[in-house]
Length: 353
Ligand SMILES: NC(=O)c1ccc[n+]([C@@H]2O[C@H](COP(=O)([O-])OP(=O)(O)OC[C@H]3O[C@@H](n4cnc5c(N)ncnc54)[C@H](OP(=O)(O)O)[C@@H]3O)[C@@H](O)[C@H]2O)c1
Ligand SMILES: [Zn+2]
Image 1 (cartoon, rainbow, N blue to C red):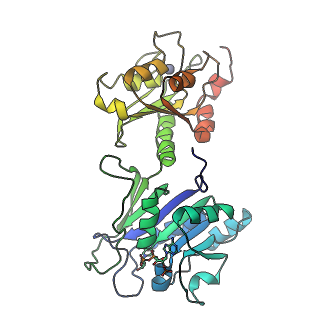
Image 2 (cartoon, rainbow, N blue to C red):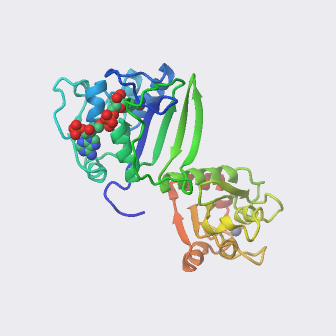
C-alpha cells in the first residue's frame, strides 16, 4: 500500500534448476534443463508481460533471444496494441556483444542500478508486469530486495554435480525464513519436470487467500436474505488454520464466525494470524449478539483482508471502521470485488429485503 516507485509493478521470477539447485553446468554453453512443454509454458508467460529482464552473465553465456516465439501469441499481442515481443532488459555495467541475439527483435534496454532504481526506470516506461529470467546474480538481487511477487521454479530430474556451476541463488538475506514462509500457490508436473508457483509479496499472498475465500463463498446454501461469504484464517507462517462460509453449520452462521468456531479461543496462532473474508466483516447483527468484527477482535487477530465492502442492504456495514478503530490492520483489496458481487448478484439485486 506504500507509494514507492515501482511498487505497483508485478514482478515474476522464472527459472529452471537441476535437482541439486544449479541453473546451468560449467561448460560455457547453455544447458537446457526444461522440456518442450515447459518451454512453451514459459513462452506463454513471456507473452503476458511488458518486459523480460536478465543479467549480463546470461547474455554472455547463453546469448538468449528473449523473444515470444509463438506466431499466434505474437499476433495476439499486436492485436491488443502491444509490440509482438516484450521490452528486453539487460542489466550490465560493461560491454555486451553488438551482435547479441536479444538485439535482433523488438525494443531493448541495457541499464544498471539497484533493483529499486531499475524498477523505477521500467515503471517510467510503462512496464506493469515484469518477468525476470536469470541468472543467479540477478535472481539473488531481486529475491533479496523483497520486490518479487511470484517465483515460478521448475525442477528438472537430473544432477549437475559440479559446485563450479552457477547456482540458483547465492548467499543473501532473503525475506522468507522458516518463520515467515513463502506461500505455495500451485505445483504442477509438466512431463518430467515440476513447476512450483510461490507467492512472495504480501499483495500476491493476500490475493491468493482472498481468491480461496471467494471460492468458499460459492459453497454457501442459497439465501435471499443474507449474503454469501467465504473466510479463511492463515497463521503467521502462511499456513491455513481454519476456513468457513455463510450458513455452513446453521441457517444464520456467518463465514468468519464459522471459521473462528473451528479454533480454540486460546489458540496461540491467532495472535499472528490474518483473516481473509470475501466481504467486509459485519459490524452489527440481528441474529447473533456478537457481529463478526467483535468476534475477530475477541479472537485477537491483528489483520483483516477483504475484497468487497458490505453494502447496507441487510445491516449497516461499519465492521472495517470498528476493526481499524480497535487497532486491527484492515486491508481492502477490491481486485476480486466483481467476483464477490457476481456470487451475491441476487441478494444485491433486491435491496432492502
Ligand atoms: N536455468 C535457467 O532458468 C537460467 C536462466 C537464466 C540464466 N541461467 C544461467 O545463469 C548463468 C548466468 O548467471 P550469472 O549469475 O553468472 O549472471 P547473471 O545473473 O545473468 O548476470 C550477472 C551480471 O549482470 C550484471 N548485473 C546484475 N545486476 C546488475 C545491476 N543491478 N546493475 C548492473 N549490472 C548488473 C553484472 O554484469 P557486468 O557487471 O559484468 O556487466 C553481473 O555480473 C548462465 O550460466 C545461464 O545459463 C539459467
Ligand atoms: Zn458477520
